[in-house]
Length: 91
Length: 270
Image (cartoon, rainbow over the protein chains, first blue to last red):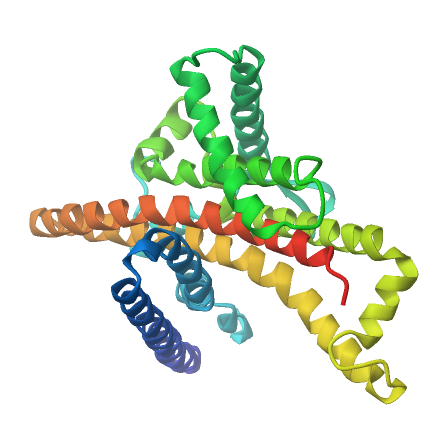
């Protein structure tokens, strides 16, 4: 019963942690990408001949901005399926 | 996936995420993910071998389709290197390294297109291996190996371009100035840069491929809940698979670009 309570508590807080990691990471990444793409659209409207070369850079920067968020998702998945915090419970 | 086994969601996912690990020595840290290494080596030999074979029969006249394809890939990488690397002959090392990295990482990422359950069935029943991860770049060891190789190249080219003394001088004096009071700040700044570059380089590629696999597995779990779940899983799976095609190519491109940028920055004098 003790063990079940400890298990439940760790699982509950891990669940909240996973939600925060993915949610806040996604918010940051999407806001950043939104700002960058709005600038790109503005630039494409001012100078349409640069659209192609700017587009290549947009994709590159998209990958770079997404990096922290995806690392966060990877960590969150690790907590979801192979939670290291559960190791503190005595078998 | 043995027939009589009791299945739950965590078991399914953990089965698909288990590496084929063999100990080299006493195990623990010294364990080799045989599946990642074997797949990476085979794909490297295959990809670069095909390139070499096509280039061997290359003609200066009208090219056949294979040669035209390789020329497209070559020109694509060459354009990128030309735009970034201005410190000498790019054909001696940087451009070939960029092409190698791009082709190899693209092939390794593309292993993610093979359907997970079909491959697991084939591997279990035809080759009798119970755990085999097909995507080498979804293994953090592979991506760190690539990123650490680029990191060592960064340090090598820094020393080659500035000399050992010049490099150490730059470590202590680079961004802020050569006043001895600023040496700790300069060193800290440079150390953080030297640590964060390979870390982000490796984890970006790993995270994208790993998260992609996990989402595929979660979608297939949804399909196991019945006919309605299957329909939803097929629709969402199609959407995610199409998006993942973009991610596979994009991540290979980003890895290559960052390789070029890091090696190019290593040549710079401050």
